[in-house]
Length: 429
Image (cartoon, rainbow, N blue to C red; front, side, top):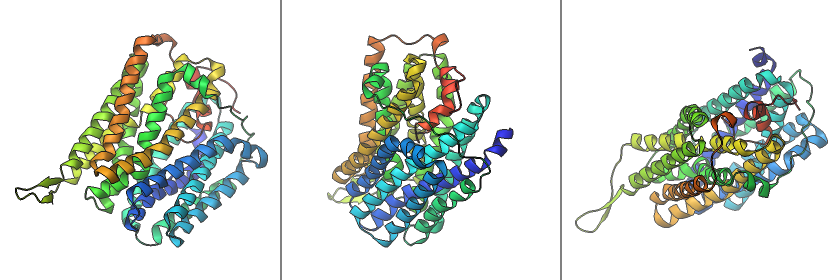
């Protein structure tokens, strides 16, 4: 795999960047709770991050066209590092929301820069393998970053400093890379009515997975803490969901290429809903009333929460890639670019709602309401899937696009996957 050597600076930069971002996401929720922020405020921190991601999705390619990949990456990495440090200097919920918005915006631009650079540097025959390596880098970096939180501790300056260092250090392999700046991508038009017309189920699936995984990635540490997990337990809880999604990604994709794809999507959605119900019931049982009418707290083995997080991630995380594959079953090759851009924007739109909604429910009704909201969202998607299966026939197996695991980072990542998804060779720009 000679491309591993050629592209190693980009993979290293991606690993450092994603580790810093993964650490910062969990750290923000844990530290915010320690500082006495209300659950709904913690949720709004996640909403702010996804709002920044959404705006960045719209503007990143235009910014890269104006000043180039390296300058954009350097500027946004510097802003991300400064934002991480500023959060520990100014402990204020509204200031933190502004910083999380900035970091979401920056991460979108950083991911777009990296992924369009990878796209321009790779040969068509290597696209699938490059995407696989990139996905593994993302999984490993985010998982390892969770292990750093118990080591560094959320209470002091160290975890924020390490996160800022990661954003800064991701610049090193980029600026020292011997590869020239690639040609920039053409701007992608966001045609949302066209996305809905191609596949209403894919549209709703991306919105739902944005809502639920957005809440999980940014606000589930609040839930984990509320049910009695310590900092190490919180890190394991978040990691379990991420690893679960990685493990079941390919088996579900293999099934969807061979049987009814909408049926597999509905199966995974039901699995996510049931996992959410399990976690909701589990957390609801920690508070019981004794014979005197006094509310008492019971102890539950943390392992049961880790199992629930693993199952939720295993079924929920692959839904995004399943939705992309389903949309491409019905799309024409010329619709691929606006479709991919529209679906990732739809995902980010869901992410701006999910963290605040789930956290507000938890503040009002207790920790059991956090995953109850997610189960309700996935249950609604099941009903929509049943309706779509009745009104529109599926695509025959011989005419389907191939399933490919897709990161939820920027529209540029779809260009790495387009040869496998569309069956076309295409250019490399």
